[in-house]
Image (cartoon, rainbow, N blue to C red; front, side):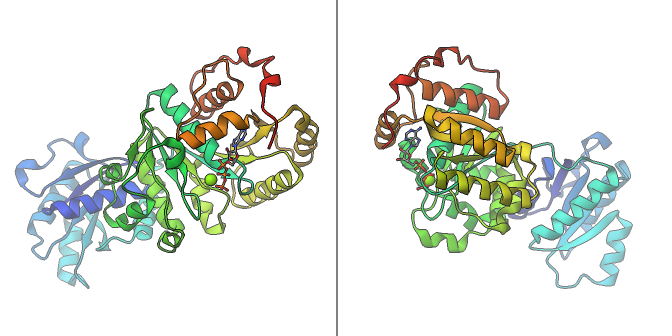
Length: 390
Ligand SMILES: Nc1ncnc2c1ncn2[C@@H]1O[C@H](COP(=O)(O)OP(=O)(O)OP(=O)(O)O)[C@@H](O)[C@H]1O
Ligand SMILES: [Mg+2]
């Protein structure tokens, strides 16, 4: 991860530069400067690894800042951003003499910026990414419990960690997480994607809906056709902004994705695959495992969760584990009455700690979020209370 700075006389451009940097997922902090000499940083320690500097028609002010930064820290990578069609050779020469390393056209192309930062990281021997705050939840097939698992995991992580936790509802065609949380979102993922050019942590915060657990929800789409405007690369940029601003981010992906979503999966710390232990569920599970492996997702990042589990499922689960060589991470007991009551009330599962399903949720949330272990001993002997599958 790199440290970064942005400099422009214009507030809007400062915000856009900050957003572009956050969206790369390669920077850990961004400082901003106006171009006034009295605001120049005065020590080399205050100068980040990379600076995006707006190169205006009157280049004196930006180039004098560039020269100042370069003098204090010669290794700083200054990238000038210019909206001019073609900077003149004279301007290019002056920029180079002032320490500017690269010139990017404005508006900034996210791929060009990403490539420039990657080059810089290689040069400096900086490790690519230490963030990995994303937990992606996928249903092996429709109705496998992806939304129920994503919502209850996210709520448990928010409650137990007390840290900044977000749930992004990316389920297609419609996002229903808000119904399970009982909140009334005013904005959705569509709004965040529409504002991508200037989406930084601050703007993203305005699109979120708070839940009383502390969880922040980015609601899903309420019209199926909105997905026409949401691209996989856009979601990667959104996820990078989320990772820069939250400690834990849970994504409900539903059960629908394609190979252009692979980069989003690759950002994840864990991919949680939920399935019921019946023949179609376990078959679909195996197919997803193969696809994820084809995306380059290491097997040890995948967490298989058998949902609506019954003791009688264990035979089939064992066969699956042997065949796929993928251990089942957790079994969530079947409790139709409790879950459907919670879903219909618009409230996360909340029975006390003796409840087997809630206990299990607390435990897997702690494991996935790297929190202290939750005592599960009270769970034993309670299985007879599960409602029958419907
Ligand atoms: N542990 C459980 N015990 C019993 N029923 C459950 C459990 N978890 C989820 N369900 C029920 O399973 C059904 C599907 O759950 P959910 O909507 O979370 O699945 P999904 O994978 O998100 O579905 P979709 O494909 O429609 O997005 C719901 O009726 C829910 O109440
Ligand atoms: Mg769902």
